[in-house]
Length: 271
Image (cartoon, rainbow, N blue to C red; front, side, top):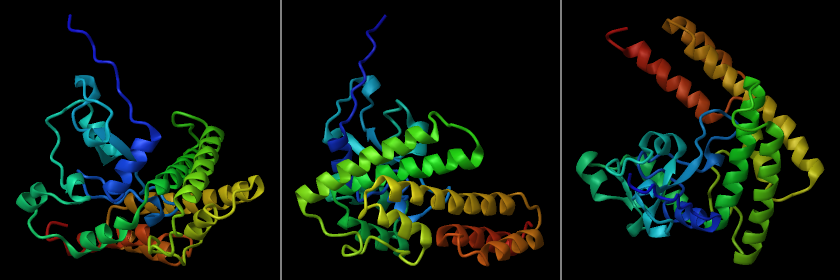
């Protein structure tokens, strides 16, 4: 029986470097993995440092063998080393690759804008992004009344640990604020403001105050998405979209998602 490869994991520092190099974007799907783009809603995706040559096949945990992937794509790919149709090239600073050129041709303006904006991402930002990921996972666990793999309290502690590391790395590198680097696309949103406040104030009291408010906002967005998707006709979908649009807690990305799906079904010749 062939000897099983020992898993080779990336360090946090390597994950941060890969995340920054690839512009906080999944190289396989081009989805933004900068969680402040989404706010407190279920549309977020964890970033994952994916082995190009899988560790199960003796791929090493070195930055050159790593790419930034969404958690969903990483789970789909698993140890399939042939599933490496990379659309963003880390060797070119996270720019669209020849694969993208051959498969999709033109770069959509929305993707170009995203990649140019997220070129300002620094390695220290990964620690903040990971803290936000823990908080949103905790919010989801509270909303669905399930612990996922861990309890909300575990995710809260993990978020605090990553925030502490973020403050240390940012101070060391003297990185400008997210706002100064134009990394925030919805600064008017309450949930985004709450998350941003955690990049400034790191006290126990403030942390838990933010959690309580984020849980409420997350629940409203999750419920709006569920109500919309449960509908079976355009009139009912539109009713749920209008209901969501009247609620200031519903994030722009959720509203645009509902609107785009409503537009599809209202104009689908097969509907």
